[in-house]
Length: 302
Ligand code: A3P
Image (cartoon, rainbow, N blue to C red):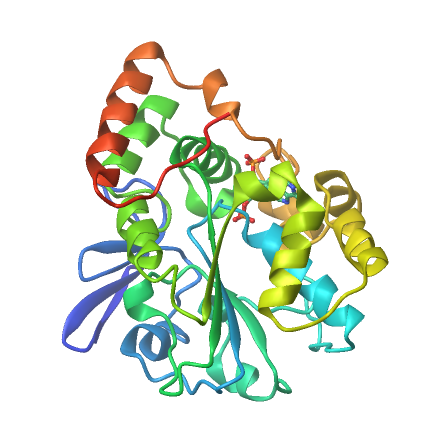
């Protein structure tokens, strides 16, 4: 049964699958959102009525850009300074997924709260004091597209049966899993120099994890010793997170995935080379160039 309602006078479809976007998603005002925005959570988060606190921390990611990674790093940093949220199945470590968690549940968490979200800038919870912090994570769009394609194809709940070619066409039309990649990343990029924003990349984390652990700790004003930074980095490698089954999807992969594959798929920079044809690379490079022109944003692709 397709469900729809209105938020601020605009139509929202829940659990929606169409010929145009052939995987289950939530759609609001013509934009694609993840299934996490449900009838319970969307009116608050898209309606802008979530009650924030001035010491909230939000980890903002476009899906498949390193959400689990940065949320778990942040969780591990916070545990070093004894800030522990209640853990439950849908949290990454102790950090809840704002988009799919009822606001009433988040209201029970002790301060300072940390939450993660896929919301674009225009819907991000804000606080008038501007002391609420955002860690924004970006990943190069070629690897994001490949990671999304594998995720959609393997997770039962999306019921996506398209080819890589089909998916790439959708992604470049701004109908990827989570909506338009460039809308998302460029809206946040405009705020990269705000005092309460830390903009980091998947590729920088891959290059020097311990250094980025230091950068995140510093931004959060937690002083970790070098040994503590090393410990956090060791707990947050691809191998360690896979082994310890971090996150609900990995824990329940036998039920949620078509082939019981791991959520921790490859975890590298440059896997796109195994998917993109020369023609696709040419078209995608042109698309990136057009969207990035004059923005100052660039990506590492390998
Ligand atoms: P791949 O599909 O390219 O392997 P998200 O958490 O936003 O859904 O992102 C998932 C992507 O991040 C997947 O990419 C996953 O393997 C990768 N990832 C998760 N933890 C990682 C880690 N510790 N190191 C490197 N990549 C990681």
